[in-house]
Image (cartoon, rainbow, N blue to C red; front, side, top):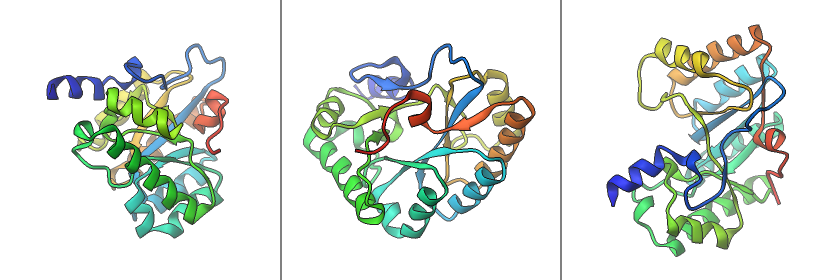
Length: 219
């Protein structure tokens, strides 16, 4: 059972159990989505500065308890034209073993924090570690969220080789990709700038998931 969960979590784009938005196939424009998980943290403002510098937009999948620590950063994300999504309240490592009711409570608690800070009701949800199982499905059916996955993982939370990470993304990059990064890792700042330079030199534009998939980020 744990092995099965790990397999699913690394292949969220398979749409097992829940239909998600992972990439836009045959996208006619050179547009991609940058998404950041696990913030906000003290790294996030540096990410925001780079996104402004290169006229790029992104979606930040925020943890509820992190938003409570940094409400001013959450407000700044919105102010600068980016979107935020739900990444549960606690980002527990036991996510794959929680009941559907407990998962729904995690999602609802994160939405409440975001709403208290921004006045927005988050529609986008990304499960911690990409874990999707029948209990997650029931929880999402209850909360009504849309699942936003990814199809191009940078491994910036695992690898400590910035050159290898950047080269891998450059090699695989295609229009319509959804790229997974983390705004709780300092090396991601360097990685992001190199990617944005590559986007600029190859006429790629970073946009938000709501723009790529033509869906609403908030309800």
